[in-house]
Length: 107
Length: 119
Figure 1: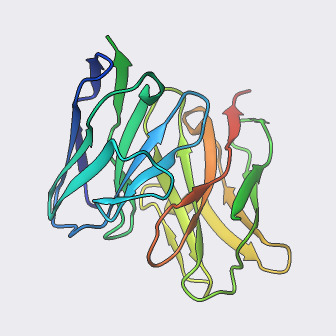
Figure 2: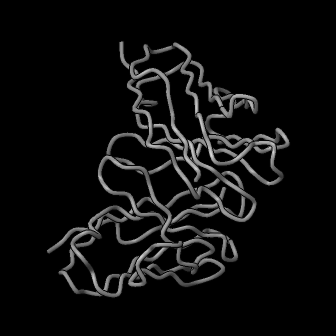
Figure 3: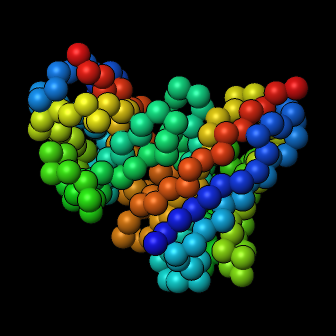
């Protein structure tokens, strides 16, 4: 199985801050990576697919980068509505695997 | 427009069999490359992939749960069913189904079905 190590597990930032979350795969997954946003009581929503492609309708302040084993998810200017838990997920191989999540809070 | 909706019990007793149905619209499970996955989330914990079925009836399962899971499709009803045997309290959580293609994994999700396993 491919292990996805996501950090940090929680993060507190101010409105307008730049926020960065990292995800490391235990083996090369090329760019087969999703980033999800999950708000309380809601299903996850894809923000980024193929490591760096912005899903249609997602604000441009969200971005993703990386390939191989190391990936980064960035919010360039944090907004109050971005409060959520974020997950990375690889689809290079089954079993599909998720990172442990990053809970983002407003400072 | 792709939509998915999970249905099934909200309460299951330990050792019982849990059966969940995903009813979808906006795509067909007869289209090449299309699949439906099941993912669960214990309260306050991370997401865990469970199973995946494709248009050609290829199936994949989580290795840790493979002996307890079965995934089937009914293309005439636009439904996918996940069955989990020998339910345990650790199986408590929200169960989601999601649309998948060869190019876009887990692109659309249902709203989830919260299942509690308790006597």
